[in-house]
Length: 374
Figure 1 (cartoon, rainbow, N blue to C red):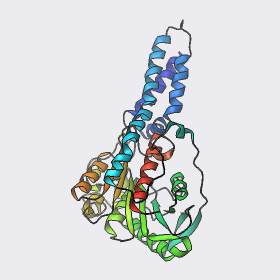
Figure 2: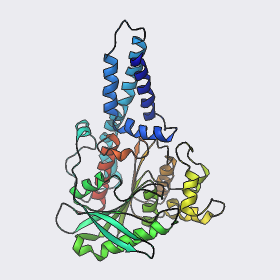
Figure 3: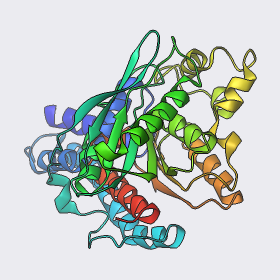
Figure 4: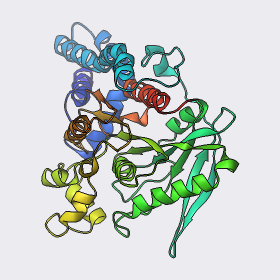
């Protein structure tokens, strides 16, 4: 009976790879299911091989654990399929200025890698009457004046900090890019466009200290996750700063008006309340705030090249946001690429060596190579 119960629990967990999580804690489990899928597949295989044939539930448990195993290995097969065409698609949309080293976008052996950490230090980049803002700077491991990626954390515009998911910062620094992971003013105390102003001040600080920090000021790239992606996109599209070379959007909300009209399940997140706190009211009371905080509103031929990364099973920020943004970028003839991950959920890059983590990291590095010369 225990074997059967474990098999059923594994199958229910595996279903989070196929369908969006219906509840907050199940969303957290979905991140594990998708990006540590090989571990759970191994557990399912062990359960399949265990048990006694004389047990009345043996056949049922074996069938269920076998199905769970097949679902758990699905992200690996999907990652291999995407990997096979990713380089060619990126070459077509965003030709490289710097040739990449011979690496593949996804490899099974990398599932077991450990990401090396790069030392970083903290600087205060902006001072306001009531607060000061800091950034964590990861210097490039390649000598000389190097491009800089400004990383903007997620957290519903009201939580999180510059230490969120730092592994990619180390990877970027190892590959020759400076990284400035910033803190910004958050809701509900601060409303939009306060974070956009903070990004602009971070740019000013980094340019002013470029010589000291070995920054190539002609090549800043904004990278944001979730709420941070909305900030990165709006900043990249509205500041009209010639020093911004590109924007990287990890599962960000691109259409705040549409997003408010189709909220996420309250069992996951009260998305309307989150947006109201950030934008200062409901859509009916502050429609201009919603329009002016929607990256879609500002897409034209002048906006910088954009990399979009989103999982189809995202239960917090609908996949539709990225489809709408991609459509707008296509219409405006802006260089862009949308990396679609059919099994992945919000925050899948928590494991940078998982199937989604590997593919997104490759896409980010390849995008950087298309924008700047090493």
